[in-house]
Every structure is written in C-alpha cells, then in structure tokens.
Length: 108
Image 1 (cartoon, rainbow, N blue to C red):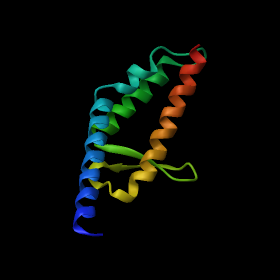
Image 2: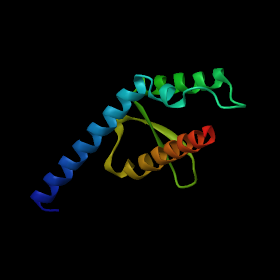
Image 3: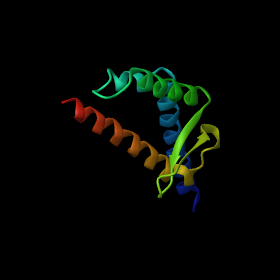
Image 4: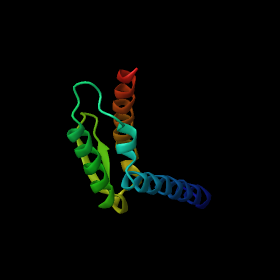
C-alpha cells in the first residue's frame, strides 16, 4: 500500500471509529429504551427494561457487539477494535436492526 492509500485507509478508519463512538454515546443515553417503546402483546415491561439497562451498561463500559458467521455474539472494548473487526461489527448491527424492525412491524 502506498503512502496515499495508507493515509486514505487511516482517515476512513478514523471516520468509522467516530461513528462507532457516536453510536456508543447514544446507547449510553438510552437509545434502546426509546426504540423499544411500550411492550408488545406477550412482552414483559420488566424484560424490556432489563434489555435497555443491559445495553446502557455495556455502552458505559465501552463494549460493542460483534457477531460471527454462525450467529455467536461477543463483546469487545471499542478501543480494542481493529479494521478486521468491521465485518463482525456490521453483522451484529444488522442483526440488531433486523430485530428492532421485526418488532416494530409487529406493532402495526
């Protein structure tokens, strides 16, 4: 990789990490609780509150979810993320978004 490509790669990584840090801050501030809203039929308010608190706690600890191709989930501190983690990070985020969308579609 030449110097220009290296610089572009580093700038892209910095933008990626800035977005991850913004997401972490939103999670710390209760994003999941707001997205979950009121319980759907058959859901427990206590369970939704537990999920939201757990998400806030992991965000406060600086942890982000990663997901493997087999669906296994693990957490890594944001400062320990490396470029090779992007795929697993994207898979975890896609799974989260899909779950929230499915849940929202059940509402209507």
